[in-house]
Image 1 (cartoon, rainbow, N blue to C red):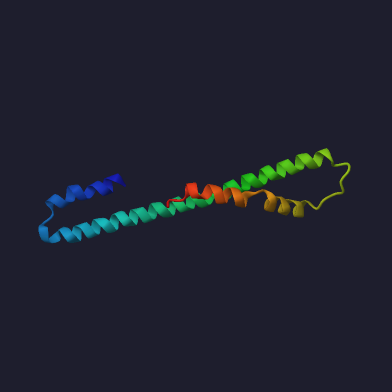
Image 2 (image 1 turned 60 degrees about the vertical axis):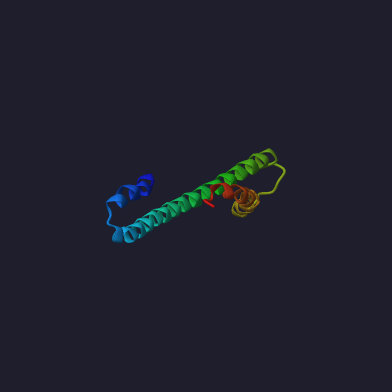
Length: 108
């Protein structure tokens, strides 16, 4: 990206006066296109990171609950595993963590 930004300094001195505006516009469009591409790439990385963070928090909550469940297994009735997993996904706190982490990952 730095090369693209510095390219105008190399090209502009050799450009004829009447073509400088067009050359600068072309260069600006090139830089903006690359920035848009990098932003899109960054967005996909952030999206993947948020998904991994949510899954890690959910996994930690599942492990925590399984440890607690194993300790008192004899006393408790059998729980439907699928509904328990759904409940743990909701209560893992990922929404709060992601809400507080996301500002550090955004480009703004």
